[in-house]
Image (tube, rainbow, N blue to C red):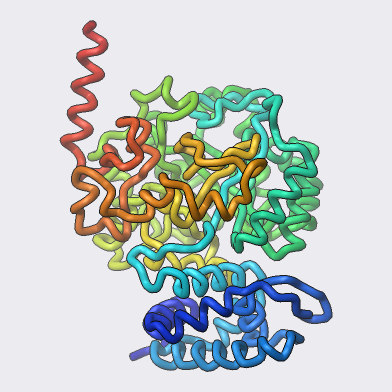
Length: 489
């Protein structure tokens, strides 16, 4: 067996090594939060977090009671890497990143609490997308948030900082600030800094308007932003601006991407795929290459918010299937990563490339964080709404996904972790036996599961079939028939 990627081997090894009652009991004990000193800085984290910091070679001073656990985990990690021919130095380097340690600690806690499940259940979301504000300087036709002005009941700064605390205590590994447009909110930099100080990975979804002025992007990076996704929906400036509602938005978005390349900040071009731009894929990828973009993410169109008004722009199952096959092939030809958030992409890449690729959770492969994220792709399995991923609204409401507007609780009334652990909807979403239609019996359900937001948008049921999948073509045809009948009436 040849040597394989360190993080991939590690995840495979710990799933095998920890899937027994004894190690699960130890992992549960290692999920206890204690205070230790790492490289001279006091921190409160899970025991497993400090054990991984020790394994990475950092200077860790913990109470003597944690020493045995540190030694235990070190042995297990070594055995896992040896058994699956993993690169130990790659793992040690990755674990120097506090966000990677948080992510791995979350996985270990999940294995201790639930054992090995397919797909894996976690005790907290790996990623939370926080719609930071309803305020926005664009008027995008497909906006799930219907963003324009700030809402009267948005969280105060103190409440936002309390959210940071709640996410930290829950063990959340990564947060993506979205909106509205988060970068124009006066609390943006303070909250970014608060997350960064706690070792939580910070990403930002932006229209790029503010960051076109490089000094603001530099400031964001200095405060702790590690990754940005910039919306570009066409290679044609006029077409993009018309879709986004404000003249000049394409020029500023492209400039933001150039700025990110220039300051070496991890980034992606984010494209929402519709019938409007499906024939532009080559032009969009060519534009990305010309800019020097590291990664392109094609977002699944979900008819929610303003998107309900342009449902006719949604791709048919056949169009989506051909689109996914095309971008999978394009990634073998181009010097950048190409993904889509459509969960069916895992199946398509298995067919086209012989491997599964992540949807929600991926980042450019030159970073240590991305290596653990990519290794988690098959581990976590397709649509993660309510299972390894959640969303937070500007007023503190918690939902399974930014595109799935079912409120399951509010962080003003309950700690996020309690909402995560007790929500009836979340519990249903974590068991794919609860799905209906072909999604329930599909042989690819463990690596896909269908888009739960699209199921809700079309059937008003988050457990219904995803009508965007080629295997659910009959559902799509029935929907078209119903729409045609309504138009006749």
